[in-house]
View 1 (cartoon, one colour):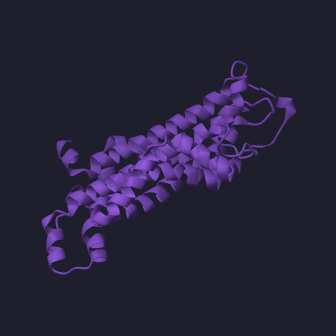
View 2 (spheres, one colour):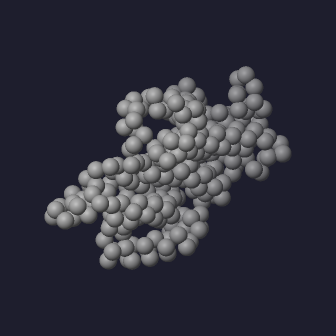
View 3 (cartoon, one colour):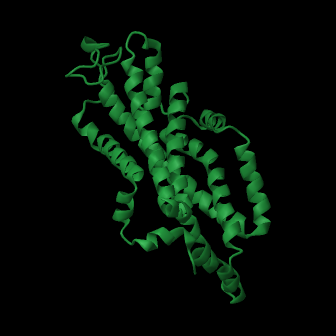
Length: 287
C-alpha cells in the first residue's frame, strides 16, 4: 500500500532531522516549548494571581514587579503566567476533542454514503452559525466554567475537522488498494483502520495546530466579553477585560497578556505551517 502522507517520513527515518531541517518548525517549537514551560512551572515561583495588596496599586513595570500591578495591587506577571495555563489547556483540550470526534464522523461520512447526507447536513448547520455566537449561547445556557467553555469552543470546531477528513476519505476510497481490499472481502472496520485512517493522520496533525490556535483566540475573546472563564480564574482574556477600563492610566494590564496571547498563537501557527511543509510530500519536494 502506498501511503503518500508518510513519504517524507520514510525518506528520512529520523524525526529529529526532519524537524531540525525545517527552520520555521524549529523556531515555532522552541517558542512554544518556552511558553509552555513558563506556564507549567511559573506559578511555582510567582505569587498567587488573586493576592491583593493595596499598597502597590497601579505600580508600573519594574525590577520587583516585572509586568506591574493592577488597581487592586495584583501582580500582572503572576496573573499572566496563570492565564497561560488556562489558555494552553483550553487550546490543547479543544484540539484533542475536536480532532477525535471529527475523525470518527469524517470517516463515517466519507465512506458510508447513507450517513454522509445526515452527518454533513448537521455539520453545515453548525457551520452556518458564527462560532463566537454559538459559544456564547451555549455558555449562557449552561453557565461559565472551564469545562463548559471547552465544550462550547469545541462544538464549532468539529465541522471543520469533519470536512477535512471526509475530503481525504472520498479521495482514498477510490484508490486501487482500497478496491482490492473490498474485492478480497476485507471487513469495513479493517479497511477503515488499515487503509484509510493512516492517510488522514498528516492533515489531522496540521489541522489540530490551527484548531488549538483558534481555540485560544476564541477563549480570550469570550473572556474579554465577560462570557468566558469566571473572573476568579485568571485568563488572558479576562485580564485584558479588567484592564480596559484603566487602559489610559495603566496600559500594561492589557499590553503584556495581549503580547503573550499573540506570541503563543503565532508560535502554534508557525508549528502548523512547518508540519504542513514537512508532512505534505508535494510541498516537501519543492523545498
